[in-house]
Amino acid sequence: MGWDWFTDPDYWASRLAFQRMLAAIYLIAFLVALNQFRALIGTRGLLPVPQLVARVPFRLAPSVFHFHYSDRFFAAVAWTGALVTAALVFGVADSAPVWVSLVVWAVPWVLYQSMVNVGRIWYSFGWESLLLEAGFLAIFLGPAGMAPPVPVLWLLLWLLFRVEFGAGMIKMRGDRCWRDLTCLYYHHETQPMPGPLSWYFHHLPKPLHKLEALASHFTQLVVPFALFAPQPASGIAAAVMIVTQLWLVASGNFSWLNVLTITIAVSALDSKLLPFSPPPLAEPPLWYRVVVLAVTALVLGLSYRPARNLVSRGQIMNFSFDRLHLVNTYGAFGSISTVRHELVFEGTDEPDLTPATVWREYEFKGKPGDPRRRPRQVAPYHLRLDWMLWFVPLSFRYGESWLERLAGKLLVADRAMLKLLRHDPFRGERPTFVRARLFRYRFTTPAERRETGDWWVRRPLESALDPRRLNAEGVPVAAE
Image 1 (cartoon, rainbow, N blue to C red):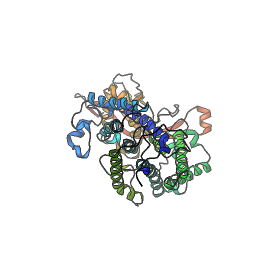
Image 2: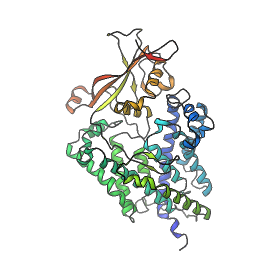
Image 3: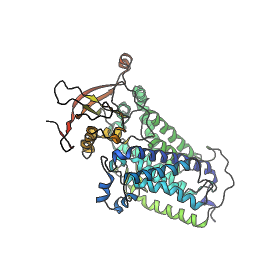
Image 4: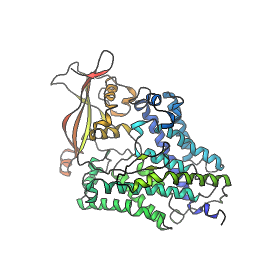
């Protein structure tokens, strides 16, 4: 039999496209870290890394930051990841020896793993684990001068299957509206971060919303099984998933989740769908074949619990069963919110609070705020603070460890924090008081939009954080 089965040149172009796209997503992730870490997890951030590594051992959260942490060192790690992945985007490892390719692709995986494992809630999203799992498999795909290894291609299919089928099963086990096909009556309006077209998607006729839900079920519950069929069925299944993910890209902002799922699906397209001729390809060395088979056995062994989770009545989503995020569970929106609540932060520079106090509003980059502002296209960039502020109204336990500290950062006009905002009404000066109020938001109707030009209608509900001020020690306290 020999080793003829081990590689397949028909996937040369798709392997190359997958690597380029994955490197670009890595690059975005490192740039996000560079722009946001000081305010969120830096030494003076909302949830500092030094506090975590002082009480959580390395074995529970493997990270280079257990050996040393400073904001300057974190920035150096993030810049290293950004530079390496930028080089990979331009194919610097394409003609390298196999061992060099493995080492170069391992660098961003190790560095980003280190960030995720100390990032706490700010790095708790499912697409972080998805990037790490896909990034781990990418290490073993080999350079462009060698045909792609079939075992790793199959592992990518297994990953894509779990992403899609897991999302489908969590919906069927979750909110009843997924079963009666009415969830999308609400979802485009209540999703974490609507995009520029979300208003239009929300106002589609209800029969089309039901068709959207039905198409989602078909793509996530039926199509994934065709991934393991011979070509062209496998490639067609991947193409259907790509089209569905592009629909999600158009209808909302989900960080790099959708483009990463598209990237993984691209690896399933053979030369009939990506008709690019490969150059003469070298045979892989024996040691590399042994390594790939060992990795395949490891991933299959670790797949037991995620696979069992898929068929479990108590299915959990976006969970890692191992500390290195090698094989994970995925899924999203098992429950759908039917109303949208938003936290609105306000401040004043008046010396005393009175019924006539004028409050000025802080504006965030992605989350809804000013009703006149059209929702922005943010993805595949990830606004971590905006996302977490969407979770807080669902349950204030999401913000109990940092919401008060956020108010404190606004009171001292913390420069790192203000960089995460779209608009600071005090232009870098300190307010005397800060508060947060809970608002009910909904999209305007077409008639309201024509009349006012607004994208949202909102009304205040209650106080989410009573006015805070700084005491003599510079600590935020409730205003008297």
